[in-house]
Length: 167
Image (cartoon, rainbow, N blue to C red; front, side, top):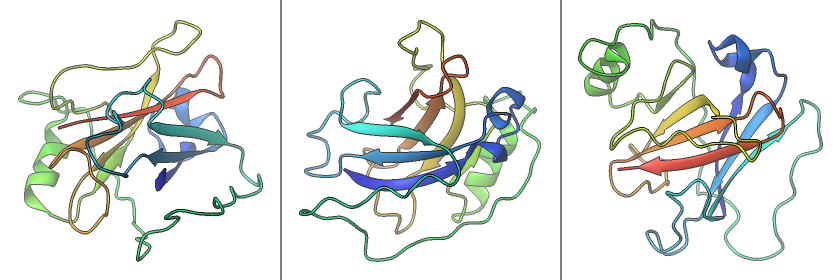
C-alpha cells in the first residue's frame, strides 16, 4: 500500500474529532490502479490508522515500492464550511474550482461525488468525517481519475478509522 497522507485530528473544526489526540495515517493500494477495490472502505485495499502523537513511526516493508519520488508539504488555510446552498460546501467547491493548488480539506463535511457513503464502524455507529483529499496535480495518487478520497474515524471507539474514494 502507498502512504498518501497524514492528518492531525486537532486540525479538524469538528469538536468530537479535534478532542481526540492523534494522527490519522492514510494508505491505499496503488498497484494496478482500478484492480484493488480501494474505493471501498471495507475491501481491505486501503487502510486508515489512528496513532497517538509520539508513537514510533511505521517502518517500511522490506520489498516493493515504499515511497513516491517526492514529498509534498501543504499548508492549511481556514475557511467557512457552513455555506451549503448549491453544494454540500459551497466555499470549498468555489476554492477547488478557482485554485488548482487546493488538494482537499480537513473538517466540515464530505463533498460527495456520487452520494453519501459514510461508513459505519464495527460498533454500529456512523463514522465522523475527518478529511477529503483531491486527486490533483502531481500527487501520485489515483482516485479513479478526478476523484476524491474521504477519511473517517469512530468517535465512540476512538481507535477505528476508514478510508474510501469516489470519482
